[in-house]
Image 1 (cartoon, rainbow, N blue to C red):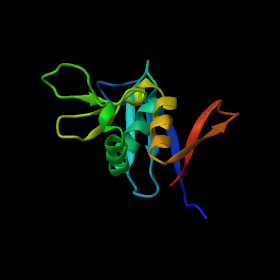
Image 2: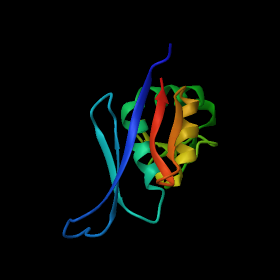
Image 3: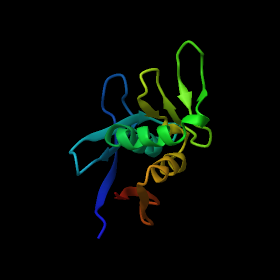
Image 4: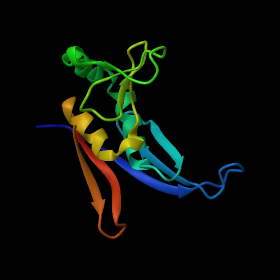
Length: 140
């Protein structure tokens, strides 16, 4: 039987001096107890926190994905920075030290595609009442 992890999403409004009124999106990992958050708006905030979760908690799987696609790696950004990407995985880059980074603001569907390529099934828990995703079921 497969093991599921539930990643709940929560929203609030910032009361901070410099960020007063900004939206805050949080994703909690019950497996590790870590919280991933972003604030602001105008980009895919849900994709951003999901991408942070994937990059931080499944770095070894992202490294395996990189190794399997070593012949497809391309330079991106400025040549001096040493950033690499795998075509077909929008938002996934590797820094000069080889660590994977995911820009989830590229969209939650891009993050889910990267996760599935790593062997992680991610399913949205959608609330009709709230009219948005309220979390994710992750099968590992």
